[in-house]
Image 1 (spheres, rainbow, N blue to C red):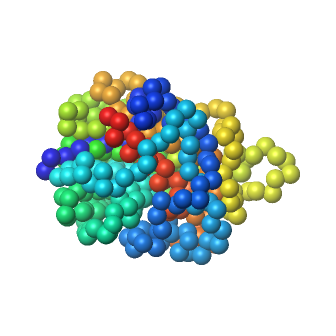
Image 2 (tube, one colour):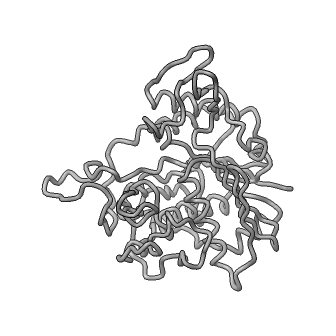
Image 3 (cartoon, rainbow, N blue to C red):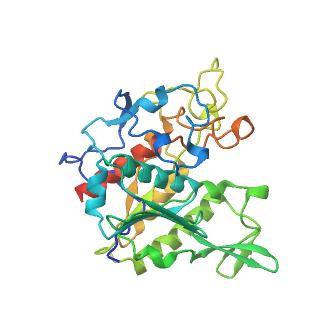
Length: 351
């Protein structure tokens, strides 16, 4: 199958939107737009319950109405038919954690609902690979769950995280896909029962733990070397998704001592432009450093700042666990990941 590989690293400044030279589409603000949302999640029965905030009873609706507007240019209007025609006989693959799944489901619904009459689709899951296909167009949208991108191996002494060994999970498909979007960060912060490893190994050295940013950088360097050695850029477009910030702690976005906010609960509108953290997210800095070191160019999808402004966009108590499972990490659908996909569409159509 003629394929397109997207490794999700976009340096947004590397492309132009509507032929606007030098436009940084990550620099902008959220504007209220009555034409939004781009789709109604109830039209996409395949969207996970954890992301369907309206279906889970979220009463406010204004959070659905915000559109990202860059200061220097306009983003293209998303066109699902164009996606299916451009990638006929090809595939787009998301590789990463549940935030990657968030974006994959968003794109599937954006394409599906933008076509009239709505096309036939198939959804098949096998192990850690999910395939959403449009048979009439021979287009596949894939999600490979691979939250660390490097290996975790079961041994007699426990689960060993191998920072210098790329994960083999669906790796063959990475080179058979036209576009591959990679994502990893949030699982590097897990501790205790949620931590998916017991020991960390680098070369012949084994550690009980290490600075997570250091481990993250070593893993990304392993991934980058794999891309440099294996990816044919004539066939594969490589992206790396920037860090998707959470809103677990209100002190990350407000310095107001009178603010009653503790986390994303009951937040109903975005932060204004200019409210972003003045210091770059440390994991984003690591990702950009690794990307600059690569021999083969990968693009960074810079979603960090625009997502930081959307403290209102999380499931909160309207996710899978209800009030017992506060979710300030993932995003409601419709919602912020739709904008990530508009940026992706802009990059793909301008290249």
